Length: 249
Image (cartoon, rainbow, N blue to C red; front, side):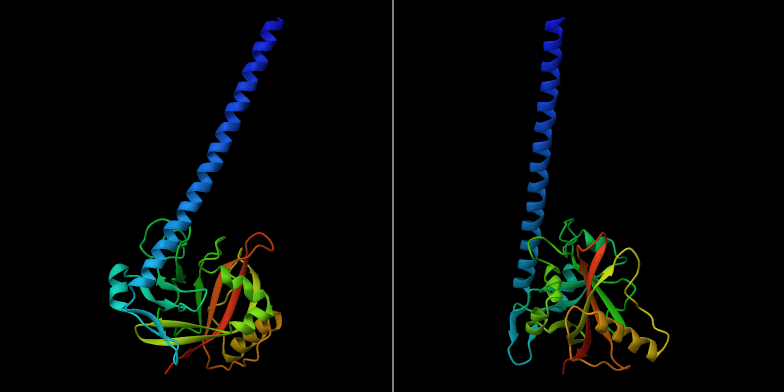
């Protein structure tokens, strides 16, 4: 009986050791996979920046010279470029058939956790909607839309009040006027407005709740862009950064 108990204990011990080993190997594999995704994603976007016609912005206009046709050939969903080499955000911009695909696919359409920077499929691609929504992940390595979280600090906003967008039909400047934490469990970012007053009231409510203070005053003729990424104040929290979009001459 005693030998039987010893054998039983040894068997249990061996099973626990085996399970622990499996757990360690699984964790190692997950870490390797995540690291591999980061490396692959970062390299893809690095090569895309290099492959542009020119990756040197005009210092006077802060504009890039981009081979839009080349990028459109590489991915028909390409609609523009957001940011420059002087910005923490510096990526091609795409629009898919839904809001799911580019959460898990790179610009090259390879599956990858970095995903892409993309506008809401319900928006027009020319930024003529009253509010255009742009999504991107908050990655641990600081890539994609991770820097949006820094706008919770007023000092960061003062140092980075604008962000350019370059498109085949013209170039734009986003002038940020508000940033707030929103609940991603429901559609807290608005597309449609009843009238001009509804739009202005909405903008004012954003500025009242903003994590930074801007002196920008919007009017009924303005159009806005909303950049959205994950935040971690609570489950499904998002940080939304709002800016007025203006066409550059």
